[in-house]
Image (tube, rainbow, N blue to C red; front, side, top):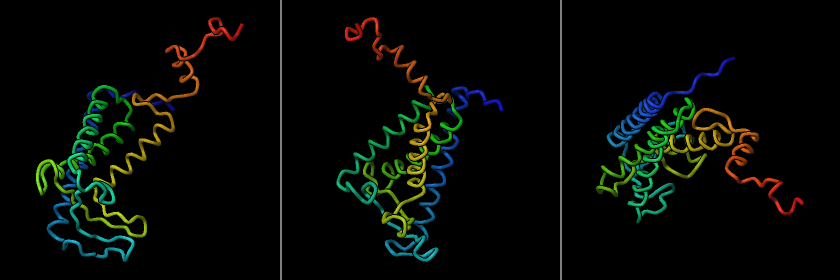
Length: 195
């Protein structure tokens, strides 16, 4: 089985952009529907206690931590978005990385847009959360959060399995070769302890 050729820079960037826009649109549409149809801070069971809807506006991060420093989360989200865009333009050639980073960027932009454009105002807006799964975790979250968390897990797995942004696989041999060419390894002929 032949492997697919790596993506060109423009193709990777386009794929990332399309996926990011789809996730951003889905997140904002879901939030709009939740705001228009859910009573604030009242549990609406969907599947008993397994899945509930509960509309809140979250000024903090996960588990409502850091409510007084909302602007820091705005800056952090903006930095993450910029890093993903930089990687998309300069480094990503793997379809899998492009998909993961596109979905992650969409989630980041979903919550960033809340921070920038929702009440109480720029740049300290509150994120709209409405999904509750109390059997799994005590947090209330949104569509963007689902993509952020699942794609961060995916990033960790891609790194763990050695898939590089360009689509090549990292192996022990490639790590050793890189260390040797960067001068990190000690040559036995120059090591005074080897004589």
